[in-house]
Amino acid sequence: MIATDHFVFIHLHKSGGTFVNECLLRFIPGAHRLGYHLPRTLIPSAISHLPVLGLARTPWSYYVSWYAFQSSRPVPNALYRILSEDGRLGFEATIRNMLDLGTVDTHLDPLIAALPSQYSGRGLNVPGFALASIRGTRVGFYAWLYRYMFSGGAGTLHVGRMENMRADLLEMLAAVGQPVTEPMRRFILQHEPTNISSHHPYTECYSDSLRDLVAERDGEIIAAQRCHFGD
Image 1 (cartoon, rainbow, N blue to C red):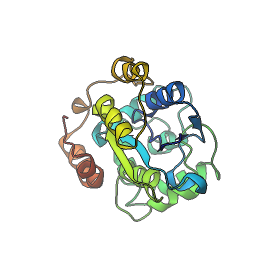
Image 2 (image 1 turned 120 degrees about the vertical axis):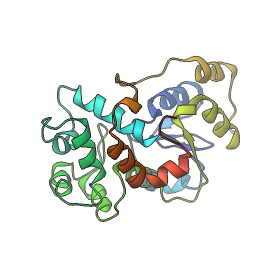
Image 3 (image 1 turned 30 degrees about the vertical axis):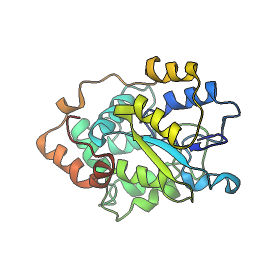
């Protein structure tokens, strides 16, 4: 979460936020970090009226990026360990478990118990009590995460698409009245992506049934982002 005089930026996981954080902290005077992967509900009351900026991505792409990143780590996080059954399950079975967190409790209860009981400054930074709100929603994990990170608050919400991040970020900054210097503009348009995961094109990773399950469980974010499989 980055606070500025004109807006607050919320960093939705694996959705281009590292690039934006670096940009804002480097180029906007007075921009400062308030916390790591904190939701909109934790914006301090004194600035809760400010517009909120964020980025989201195509859900099918998110799950592939998340899986590639976690499965390559020496010590994956609790979410990956529990949903993949300590790495014994492959991509399809792990993501099915992830999509089922809001539908069945098989993996949800042990995951809630394994997550921290409070916020920290690293990792997933979703405490167990926060994830418990996914129970019974029948939505996918990424759709739940989108709700959790961006819901609440009084300020106007602007969420761009990671796939069109450079142009959308410039449009969002203009919409909230944030001046953009020429060096900042060049950074946004030309700087290399950051914190990217190495994986095959996401369209090659899905069976038809898993593709359709993402469309069902994450339908609200697909509609909000106006995205389609293969975008």
